[in-house]
Amino acid sequence: MATNEERLAALGVTLPPPFKDEANRVRALRSGQHIYMSGHGPLGPGNVPMMVGKLGRELSIPQGREAARLAGLCTLSTLRTYLGDLNSITRVVRVVGFINCAPGFNTPSDVLHGFSDLMVDVFGEGGRHTRSAIGVAELYADIPIEVEALFEVAS
Image 1 (cartoon, helix red, strand yellow):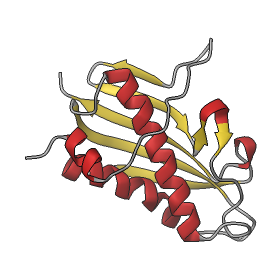
Image 2 (image 1 turned 90 degrees about the vertical axis):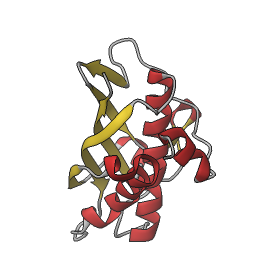
Image 3 (image 1 turned 180 degrees about the horizontal axis):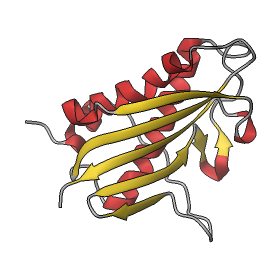
């Protein structure tokens, strides 16, 4: 059976550089068997957006799914840096996606599939999770999505 790291390598993706923690917050925090992740968006080095725009105006659902996937890659990068590798992750427990929506865009859940699909690709059945997708009026630097996640780790 393939490990989480082997499944990630088989996808042929390179994780972006991890975010640097700021003085008064952290991107990942372990409490017991859970790791709570701060919000991650499709941001590259220096917090420069990889994508910008609102769903239903500048961006289509497929573009939003790609933004959600990029947010997932950023999340995995932070998680790997925090843990050393991804093999101790046993489950993605909970995901909350905040989708930057134009007025009238009412299918934010369709966008969050990009994040959810990546989690299943990397963690197999352990990547299936509970989730909420919430449409919002604005996000940092006009990024299309920000995702919070809760992971379970082996003891």
